[in-house]
Length: 75
View (cartoon, rainbow, N blue to C red):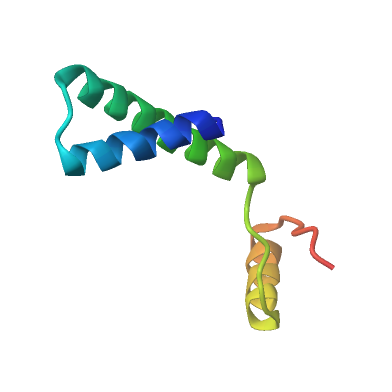
Protein backbone atom coordinates (compact mmCIF):
# COMPACT_ATOMS: atom_id res chain seq x y z
CA UNK A 1 0.00 0.00 0.00
CA UNK A 2 1.43 3.35 -0.98
CA UNK A 3 1.04 6.78 0.62
CA UNK A 4 -1.47 7.90 -2.02
CA UNK A 5 -3.81 5.06 -1.05
CA UNK A 6 -3.43 5.85 2.66
CA UNK A 7 -4.19 9.50 1.95
CA UNK A 8 -7.30 8.43 0.05
CA UNK A 9 -8.46 6.33 3.03
CA UNK A 10 -8.03 9.37 5.27
CA UNK A 11 -9.82 11.68 2.83
CA UNK A 12 -12.76 9.31 2.59
CA UNK A 13 -12.90 9.08 6.38
CA UNK A 14 -12.97 12.86 6.76
CA UNK A 15 -15.63 13.18 4.07
CA UNK A 16 -17.74 10.47 5.72
CA UNK A 17 -17.75 12.46 8.96
CA UNK A 18 -18.38 15.83 7.29
CA UNK A 19 -21.02 15.08 4.69
CA UNK A 20 -21.33 11.35 4.14
CA UNK A 21 -20.23 9.09 1.32
CA UNK A 22 -21.92 7.87 -1.83
CA UNK A 23 -22.40 4.12 -2.20
CA UNK A 24 -19.48 4.02 -4.63
CA UNK A 25 -17.24 5.85 -2.16
CA UNK A 26 -18.30 3.49 0.63
CA UNK A 27 -17.27 0.52 -1.53
CA UNK A 28 -13.96 2.18 -2.36
CA UNK A 29 -13.34 2.91 1.33
CA UNK A 30 -14.11 -0.69 2.31
CA UNK A 31 -11.78 -2.03 -0.39
CA UNK A 32 -8.93 0.30 0.57
CA UNK A 33 -9.31 -0.58 4.26
CA UNK A 34 -9.30 -4.29 3.43
CA UNK A 35 -6.11 -3.85 1.38
CA UNK A 36 -4.53 -1.85 4.19
CA UNK A 37 -5.26 -4.52 6.81
CA UNK A 38 -4.04 -7.29 4.50
CA UNK A 39 -0.83 -5.34 3.88
CA UNK A 40 -0.26 -4.91 7.62
CA UNK A 41 -0.86 -8.62 8.22
CA UNK A 42 1.56 -9.57 5.44
CA UNK A 43 4.22 -7.17 6.73
CA UNK A 44 3.91 -8.58 10.25
CA UNK A 45 4.26 -12.17 9.02
CA UNK A 46 7.28 -11.32 6.86
CA UNK A 47 9.07 -9.67 9.76
CA UNK A 48 8.70 -12.82 11.79
CA UNK A 49 8.73 -13.28 15.51
CA UNK A 50 9.68 -10.17 17.51
CA UNK A 51 12.82 -10.33 19.62
CA UNK A 52 12.49 -10.16 23.42
CA UNK A 53 13.07 -6.65 24.74
CA UNK A 54 14.50 -7.36 28.17
CA UNK A 55 16.63 -10.01 29.88
CA UNK A 56 13.74 -11.73 31.67
CA UNK A 57 11.84 -12.14 28.42
CA UNK A 58 15.01 -13.29 26.70
CA UNK A 59 15.65 -16.02 29.30
CA UNK A 60 12.01 -17.13 29.19
CA UNK A 61 12.14 -17.36 25.39
CA UNK A 62 15.43 -19.29 25.45
CA UNK A 63 14.03 -21.73 27.99
CA UNK A 64 10.91 -22.23 25.91
CA UNK A 65 12.89 -22.78 22.71
CA UNK A 66 15.29 -25.16 24.46
CA UNK A 67 12.36 -27.17 25.80
CA UNK A 68 10.91 -27.41 22.29
CA UNK A 69 14.30 -28.34 20.82
CA UNK A 70 14.64 -25.23 18.70
CA UNK A 71 17.42 -22.72 18.50
CA UNK A 72 16.43 -19.08 19.11
CA UNK A 73 19.26 -17.35 17.27
CA UNK A 74 19.60 -14.89 20.15
CA UNK A 75 23.01 -14.06 21.56
